[in-house]
Structures are given as C-alpha cells and as structure tokens.
Image 1 (tube, protein in one colour):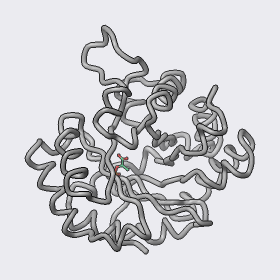
Image 2 (spheres, rainbow, N blue to C red):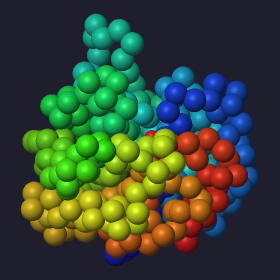
Image 3 (cartoon, protein in one colour):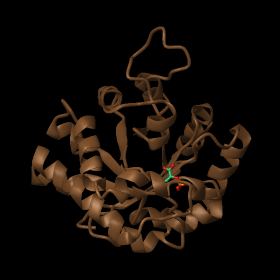
Length: 256
Ligand code: PEP
C-alpha cells in the first residue's frame, strides 16, 4: 500500500535439514517465476546451517528471492559460544535478519535493550532488520496492545538514526496468533501496524514513516493473506508454518 512493495518473508524457525532446505528453495524457484517479483519481494529465512547452500542457489541461479537469518549476536566476534555475528551473516549474503521475534523474547529472555543492541549490530553490518513486536494474550485482553507494541518499537530504535530506520522492516506479530491458527482480524493487524507507523512518524518524520514496510505475522496462509495485506498500513507478511510448504508459500507470495 501507498507505493510500498509488499514483502513476504518465510521464517522457517528450527525446521528443515540441509537437504530439505535445498528442496524447498528449488520448488519455490519453479513455482514462482520471475514475473511475480514485479509485485512482491520474497525472502526465505532458514536456520543458520542452511544459509550457505541457500546463498549458493540464489546467487548461482540468479533467483529473485533473497535470504536472511533468524537472529544475530550483538557482538562482532569473541568468546560467545554458539552465537553468530552480523559480519558472518553479511558474508553469507544475507539481506535481512529477524530481530526480537517473540520466541527469542520468551524462550531466551531477550529484552528491549538486547533487541536494541542487535538492531545496531545489524545496521553496522549492512543487514536490514525485520524487527518484531507483539503482545501476549493478557496484554491484548487488557486493551494495552497498542501501547505495548509502540513501547517495544521505541525501545528497539534507541540511538537509531532516521537514515538507518528508513530501510528497516517492522513486523507486528501478536503472540497469541503465532503458530496457533488464530489469525488476527485484518482490522486488528491494521490498528497496530498504523500505530507503529505513527510512532515512526513521531520519531523520524513523514518520509521515514512512509518508506518503512510494516508486516503482519501470525498464522498467515494463502487463504487469509490477501485480506490482511489489503490494509493500508500492512505491507506484507512474516510467515512461519505456511512457509515450510513450497506450494502453499508460493500461493501466498502470488498475492497481487
Ligand atoms: C512467525 O514465527 O513469525 C509466525 C508468524 O509463525 P506462524 O505463521 O506459524 O504463526
């Protein structure tokens, strides 16, 4: 909407071994011929262990989809066993990196300060954050969801300049809708995505607010994506479960 090209990003989470990952991208390459990319940008976000091979396929076969990672360390290098740095991801040709996913916030206790540090590490390494915010069911039922999400956004954007923020992607992912089959209504998605854009306007002005793509995520499928992405402030989708099936994900990407 409003001149922003929709982005559909498939977050595979901790799924698909190496062989399965290659198979999925091959199928997607055939299912999504070049003409689709005039209307939509498509990204796949595999586990770290699959990225090198996916990069080779995308570059070698000049596929139009891009790839990203699901997380990064806030540090450049050093004694951080098990972590992967932004510099490493940049070398693997990653365009995007998901930051602040609710599963990282919940399972790994990531707070706004750490999310902010990761955002800065992404910027430093030329990676585009897909910055996730979202409320749990208790917050939604208390009616505090807009405040909760805009607070998370402000926390994540500390010390981020307007120039940097202009290329970011935001994702509104209500926790109660992730992997539950319970999709937010299009109006619910629009309400929070519009509030996130308004926060960008307050922080950085109209130009940045007009440029940044704000995605919705939470049980998006080919059957509900069109209605959600038709909302004025929703510029695409972050897709979990439905991104693991090539036919379903291709259908979902062929939205407009
Ligand atoms: C996600 O993990 O970002 C997500 C939206 O998952 P699902 O589509 O499975 O709800």
